[in-house]
Image 1 (tube, rainbow, N blue to C red):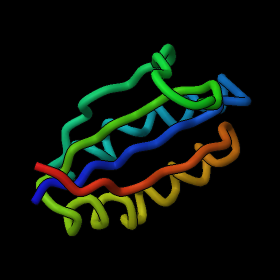
Image 2 (spheres, helix red, strand yellow):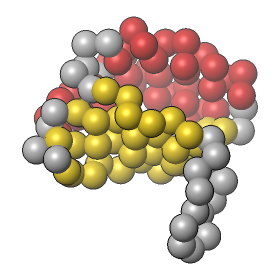
Image 3 (cartoon, rainbow, N blue to C red):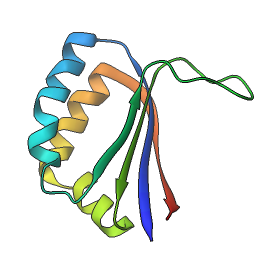
Image 4 (cartoon, one colour):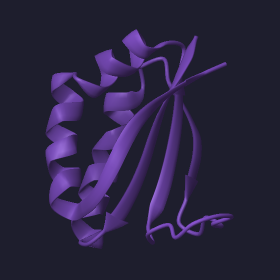
Length: 95
């Protein structure tokens, strides 16, 4: 079953976030994941969504997602992302 990494981020420090992005491809390359969507202008259909960037990444399964997310390389990048943005990230199981 596919597993989706879904994040909603409010970027506070654009320059520092660019540092995160600069290292992302190298850490992500062999993860088995596929970036499905990155959108700074999502459309809210219901409720009151906070402003920010939405990111959806598909992995073949939760194990692959966690191997990438818990990897030393991504942990280093996540520390940079946490400095640059506030947000939430969840796993959604799907097809």
